[in-house]
Length: 86
Image (cartoon, one colour):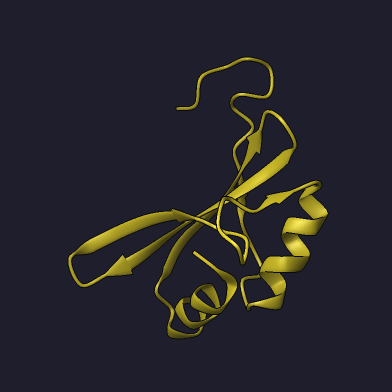
């Protein structure tokens, strides 16, 4: 999901959960859960040219999400110390 779509979803109140998870190689990947007509869907935030958008810091995640109207998010640190995600 790219930022323009995320902004529309945030404005309509369709976003259910925003979660930052560690990317073992580079930083943090953001996962968005949102309501659809057939239930809920989960997508990673993407770069303009495709592929997951990886943030180097949680501060960068917060600035990006605040810019589209999402002032809060969850951080899932499972995997940082070799743990499996829940």
